[in-house]
Length: 85
Image (cartoon, rainbow, N blue to C red; front, side, top):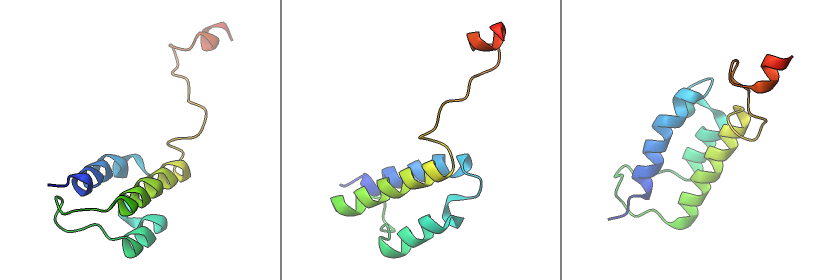
């Protein structure tokens, strides 16, 4: 049993609410789904290149949405520089 497709689907459920619009409405995601569709069966065999391409598109979406790859925001009250400024 291969669980890579199931892991990707579960990750999508976590990523989508963090985006400014539903994941499946983002153009990059729609292009990916057309080019490298995930199997309907979450336990169907998924080759490595398809899995890797999905991980790459998730990274692109997260960067485009500002979720990764930028300086972390400070939390007011927990950042020492906020108190001294």
